[in-house]
Image (tube, rainbow, N blue to C red):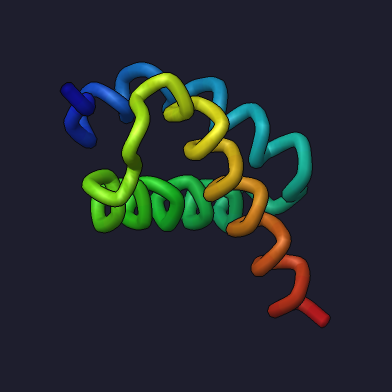
Length: 74
């Protein structure tokens, strides 16, 4: 059974916050990206077929969100 968004928030909030903050120097933007990541997780959790891939899936969403933020800044 797939975990719900709240469970994922409790599991990944701090590690993702560190991951994003390391790459984005603006704390407000880093917080915005973190929230965006969890909105995407919430919207697409049902598309994740295999629970064993959840950490990789979450970090892929975060990496893409950071890359999108860099693209918007250009």
